[in-house]
Image (cartoon, rainbow, N blue to C red; front, side, top):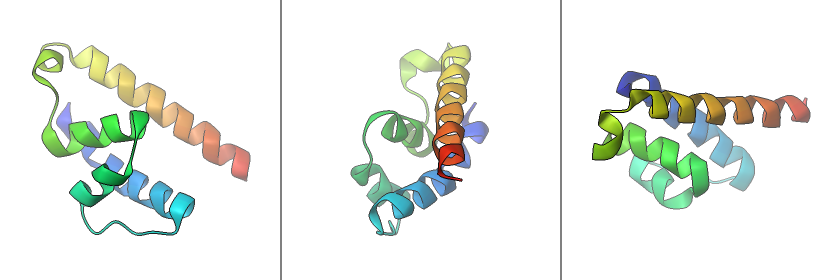
Length: 79
């Protein structure tokens, strides 16, 4: 599951820069700036899945799919 979350850092970094004009220098710095689902997604990428989720990869995949769909919808509307 974790390899699927690794690339989210770069997406979240770009999104954060577009929203705020600030560039986070590290994953931990970006994590401190985020909230909601964005923060939850990056927390999995940085810290790994919570103990309860390790036995339920379908929950993590569902979270990632829902989040990525929302990101696509958000930035599609900007075009």
